[in-house]
Image (cartoon, rainbow, N blue to C red; front, side, top):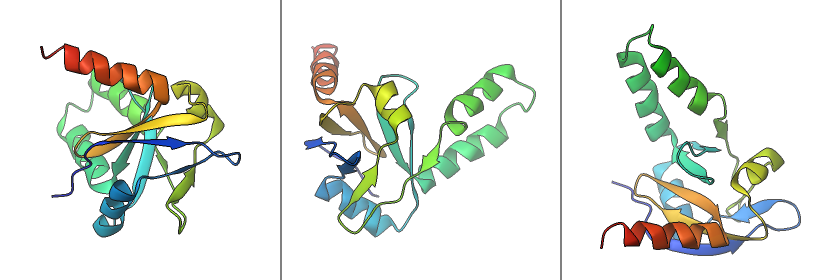
Length: 138
């Protein structure tokens, strides 16, 4: 099982590219799967998922009530913003402007591993998210 662990700092360069941290890049490469990005439904960050996770979501959609409005809203919220990313030889990809705006990304960013996916945060928002998450378990 491939697991995205730990946190890493990075930047968005002048061409709107981010460089995926080496441990995360290794997981993506060894999975040989397509990689997707979308706006988080929980936080002001971006989520990066492998195609196996996206396929799992599709399967769950198919198993739910076809006529359910809640199910339809869930599909719309995720699938309408889902984009495949193209990672170059250096492990970089372009973060489109609308995704940067949604997640308030500036130059400094934070990658947070979440097991089956990872998130990209504006650095200060991500650090605060980690702090709040830890406090919830004290």
